Length: 303
Image 1 (spheres, rainbow, N blue to C red):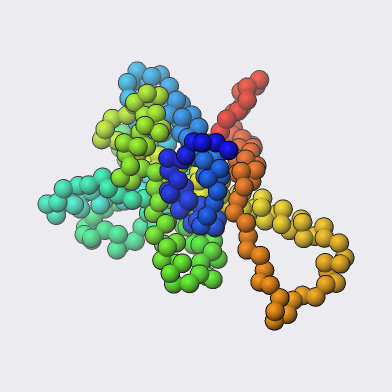
Image 2 (cartoon, helix red, strand yellow):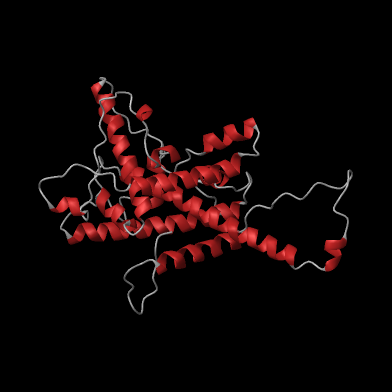
């Protein structure tokens, strides 16, 4: 047992709970998830800094960071949509004479398609976030924006809403209130100094202070924790089904239970072996979707 304590124990615990895990995961499981996510962040920052150096820049930009997940179209569109709505909120606050604030929490609602209620001023316009590898950026004259990715975002949002509905349909009012609060868990919100030290910002790589790098990293790391948890829960569920299927015939012929039978045993929290297998599965799944692979090297991709 390691004596090291996770630096983001509460945040990871909340993210895992939103994804379907129990409220009491073990310290070893949380520490393993934090270590895996930290390694992923190190990899992203190294790659982003190398891209910046190649073009002769000292600091890496938002584009260098988003470029690391360019093969995941749905994730890229969620980041773009988040940045676009953040710009709308900042513009609206400036128009109202209020100081813009960076204390903005990225939630699941911001990843999907926005609504008119999100913008206090009806005249606020969502400006698209252009990326250097987009075809539209090759031309000086910009054509009117066509929401060709709207269906992609909408389908992903509907699927997430469906899964959230399945997770919360049996919750009590107090449990749902806790779940709703935990949806906004973040590595970066009001924890910028701690996150910079944990991620190695300023040592591995550096960005301009006015960039949205921390917000983008906060979004990506939150999704990594949720992806690991969801995949680990699938592995655990498969183990439970396999164990029940392999039971002897005496289990099938025994009494199903009566009034004084003990209640069914609650699901155990995830173990570290589930997280390790989940990470391996996500790595190989992403690797199969990677267009180019370097022969003779062990590939390391983002989950």
